[in-house]
Structures are given as C-alpha cells and as structure tokens.
Length: 279
Ligand code: NDP
Image 1: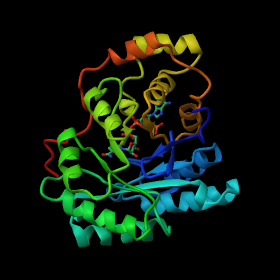
Image 2: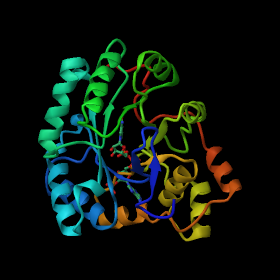
Image 3: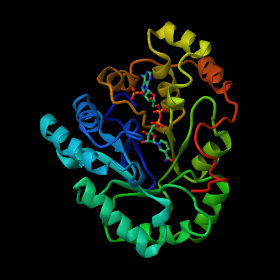
C-alpha cells in the first residue's frame, strides 16, 4: 500500500481502500457534510456509515458534493453501511437496505454489513444480504462485531462468505486470534475505533515512536493497522485531522516498533462486547 487510493482485494474480487473515513456520532448537518466533502477532497475514497448513526442523508449529500467538487465518479468511491439489529430478518433486512439507499441517495452500496451478531437473527439477515448480492444490488457483503464462533456458525450455512469483519481494533485490543482466523478464511479484518476514540494518543510508547518519524501517535496507530493488513476508518470532522490521519503512507514502522505496539494489548474494549449485547 503506497497511497490513500490503494486497495485491498476482497475475497469476491472487489477492491476496497485500506483507509477511509468513519462518521459514528456525527449528526446530520453542515459539520457532517463538510467532513465527507473534505475527506474526498483530500483523496479519501472510502466512507463508513450505518443506519443507526442516523446520518445517511448528510453522508449522501457530502458524497454528492464531494464527488462533484473533486470531479470524480461514483465508481471511484467505496461506500459502506450496516443493517441495524431491529431490522435483522429476511424481509426486514431487504427493506432496510432500500431505506439506506434512499437516504444516501445512491443506487448501490459497495459494502453492506450486519452491524451486530444478534443471536437467532443474524443468519436470516445473512440470507437477505446474499439475495442482494446475487441480484447485483450490492458489490460486497460482510459482517461486523462477529467473534470466531459467530463466523463459524455463519460459515456452516452461508452460500456466500463475508468479505469483511469490521470489529473494534486498536493497540489495547489486538484481537490476534480473530486476526489469524480471518486470515485463514480470507475474510478481511477492518478496525473500528482504531484510535480508541482518541483515548490512547498520549501513550508514551506511541509518542516516542511518533517523534522518531515526526508523526503523531494517531498516525503511528493507523500505520500499525496498515502494516498488520487491517483496513481502517478513523473518524474526524476536522480538516487538519482528516489530512493527518491519511498521511500514513510515507513511513514504515520497524518490526520492533510493531512488537512494542502489540504489547500494549489489554483485551480492553471501549465499545460493547459482542457476546453480551442487550440492544
Ligand atoms: P476513532 O477511534 O476513529 O476516534 C475518533 C475520535 O478521535 C474522535 O473524537 C476524533 O475527534 C478523534 N480524532 C480523530 N483523529 C484524531 C487525531 N489525528 N488526533 C487526535 N484526535 C483525533 O473512533 P470511532 O468510534 O469514531 O471509530 C471510527 C469509525 O468506525 C466510526 O466513525 C464508525 O464509522 C466505525 N464504527 C463502527 C462500529 C461498529 O460497531 N461496526 C462501532 C464504532 C465505530 P474529532 O472528530 O474532533 O477530530
């Protein structure tokens, strides 16, 4: 991976940018629209949203304006959304997809994910995603927050393998077993809250490595993602940080530095534990 437009090859042949922008907790309004426009202007080609974020309309507006300003076509952009838990089911997931498209103002998504592995529900929802994929309505389908046992269950019955598993992943939660499982089954791992929602950026180990390269702790973490072969989607609405988070293609961490960052793992989550969700 040499620049922001470089892509990983997913198991169905679709290519996905290694780095994109996330918009969790960004409400509808000019800040959201501007964040998407700014990201596209600075070369981002991947946007991650979800039905539950309640911001698909603004994301769609930001995409339309951003593409026009940058003079690029829809085909150059990779857009992800996710079906929310209350819509998991065959018919309800099909309907949720249409609603997301309508709000985004798009004709197709590049990637549609099951947001959480709600027991007793995610297999039916997966059948719906398979239908959407087979009908050519979506370019790729995947899952989010799936543990190994969820993936094993899904793979038993799935006709189509998920291309992606988007999970919480940062130096405090390195998910080594899930990484190995994903690699073995050719399911691309994608990091949500890669910056641990901003809570890890003062860590002395990260700051020391950062100073060596004249980079920030955030850039070191995102570089660590990429060198681990993990797709990543840091969120920021600030132009300076949107640019900063994408400037991670011009330096390389050593094996030792990768190891030191791995050692920060504490199996610590900032988000919900997928095995104990009550929403
Ligand atoms: P991140 O780890 O990306 O951290 C975002 C926070 O860090 C924001 O407060 C942001 O503030 C700040 N920040 C961003 N860049 C920098 C920087 N360079 N220096 C200092 N602070 C910085 O958290 P998210 O939880 O937003 O995760 C990223 C994306 O992952 C989400 O937006 C969403 O798309 C996805 N996600 C998916 C989930 C799932 O269940 N599938 C769950 C959670 C997230 P500011 O905006 O002010 O710059």
